Length: 304
Image (tube, rainbow, N blue to C red):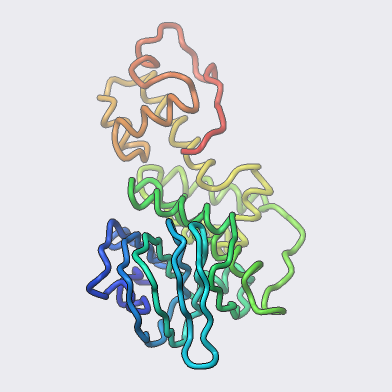
């Protein structure tokens, strides 16, 4: 699959009154395009797009009018309100004031994957509230703003969670498949996934590649992996990276910056931040410690 970009959007982002702060362009994301920006008031009609659009209002309230003629709807949307535009539909919209937003454009494949391969029809939303969807969009925006290549597994995971939330809570009645009972990976599948993680520990590792090693879809893989390990793929991969970094720091003399990159961290500061959060120490302190034996560190479960 190719990376999603501005050409896959409805066209709002190409308006002259839009000032982008940061986007996912160039990050290689194939199922999501994300953009954070400031929008000036406008009224326009946009052609259908191949992606599903979710807009999160970061401030407000602001008046938004959707549709044309007798079918138009108008709402005053507060901060945290959501605007949802399904793929393949023309959009007539009027924004009544200046607004800071985050746009998340999701490929239809992401929603199908979250719905066990079945088609999904989304509702048109204007001013809806969904705390989980809001937090997922904010987390993705934060990942773009402070991008680190090693976060690829994490952002793929967030994308899948956002797609699943839209399917379950914003789908037209009957389009979502009931979630199957939780079941884990087989021992062979888990071994194949771990082997791939260890082989590509220094690389950005998409969820799709991990899922393929277990012959599963992305959403099936993420659910079954958590059922087997009690962790998300991102948390598990981060732990493997940290364990290898600790071994190299204890047994080798390579500079800390080289150890960090060799273990999949973006730079030395990234390794230091994760090690301090999870182990309560730093790479330099770990290397200086005398008599430290592998396995003495206690892992603390925290975001990576």
